Image (cartoon, rainbow, N blue to C red):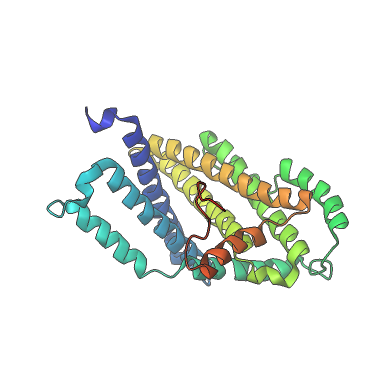
Length: 286
């Protein structure tokens, strides 16, 4: 059977191709803005691109193992060396924790300086958070368009542009919710910072892809119809991921339960036990 006839392989290759397309798009997008002197600093954007590059490398390793199968470990074939090179490249990258902090801390400081106040840092009670959560839920489900980007891009990208604007509005709402809940301790909450970083990464990737695809179709670039399709597909996936992340934050507020300590507590148990600490399901206790 041909590889092109295998649906699992086509799915894996499509994910790999999409990662490469978005990574290339973000690099050219930031490079173009830099050439026009529209950026004074690219620290946040560079960290986002580096974090996305690590995801692309991990996807490349998955692609090699799923497509090549057992042959990916054959030293006489190039796949084994490809995996070693990918692992070596990732080892030289900064840890994800450092990248997340470099992405989110400046963004949070900027948001607080422009939108924060005494209420932002106030640690509210659970009942007050619940009442505020009702209003947050309305803003999350029905955000308002501000920039109307869909009017300035190719018509087939209108849905992606609207999703991007929704994600922008919801990002501000998430930062506001997390700061109301955690105050200045948000800077030390890795799980919350990771959520914000994911939202910012999706936003940069979406606007970069929308701008590239709209220009490509307007000037008649070869395969521009594929760029439109790939952009709409990615923006749909990115918007759904952002909605899922934001919904988890909203659910935490509604249920008055913070799941982050439980997640971190599981890791602490593994570290304290120096390994997996659960007894076997067939273990006898007598």
